[in-house]
Image (tube, rainbow, N blue to C red; front, side):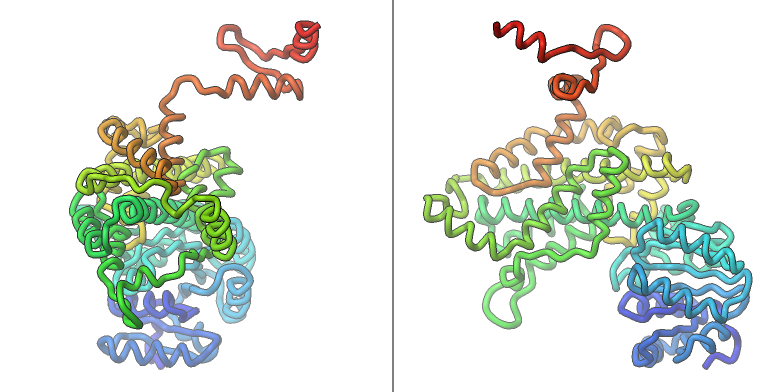
Length: 486
């Protein structure tokens, strides 16, 4: 029990909540914690003792929890998105006072945050929706944090989040006030969409190297370790290298080969794709990663399909091609990097489109900066993305930044070789293929969309514009075509 009022409270002590609470306490901010299941409270208090007698105080009931915090109170909630958040707000609100602040640190749908900010304002409370990325390790040692909503509320926790967030040399803490309304949640949602794309692209690189290049897990471990020393240096490449080095503790071989090829998901990737569609922002790399997860879920159907096509002469790999391993590894590295640029470009364009629609005034370079440490998509090339937006805040697309354009031009031959090799081998690379198609469509001055628009005008009189004359036009295509057939 705290004798002096604590600086902040945290409600919701699953893995992320526990670790963030311990991180806050370790940075010197006395913290009160509460969870509906009281055993979690005791568990967190025990951990605080073991991890250095940290100033963390547990409470079994919401009233004593709220009253233990200094005014104006700040309480972070880390509970499951949706109804549990509303329930927690209701529970805490009974004891909060005007000027107190609630921070939702979960992966919440941005419109729910905007609704809640308005609802709690009627009682005089402030509200923040704060995306937190970094998984359990990041929460404990320094996550990337994306707070959006009431600026006044942000100022109440700024001293805490600046110390608790990941710290990057020459770049500072991986946190900034994102903007108004649900902008913090929206940015975290797109961060997760980019993460989906990144993970899929890495999985495709693995598939091509293993299935076509016949690389062993030891060789893959070595390749990814090497890649993590160059332009692909990132958290996801680092953990991928680690995964290939871990042996199975329940049998022979490597653990990765025993993991069922069925990917789970919690919804942020789906939300990202839905928002891209709503805003007419092309995001094919992110979309293909979502489709790949859906297809992975059809495991039983795929087992049956494999039998059907094997009987018809289709093996798992269509052609057993002899490849130069060294050349293949280099080509796949280049293809992965070029595809990654497309994935981040799509995510950034989606954030910009939403920012314009909502008037949030989001700064894309600053988002790249706070993603450089702590979060799942942290990568060395985010520094380059920040520099691109520093050079030109109005940059239409990362692909046309002079430096990124030069890198893609240098890598595009290798990129095409990898995609062609995969296609000819019967290996699907939806992320790399979609990224390449995105690049090829974006760089072409003229696309076959003229024919699609002509078709729309033919059957639905939707009109069309011309390349040589201003205005909208409609042609009686059917009549002209019928006359010409007579």
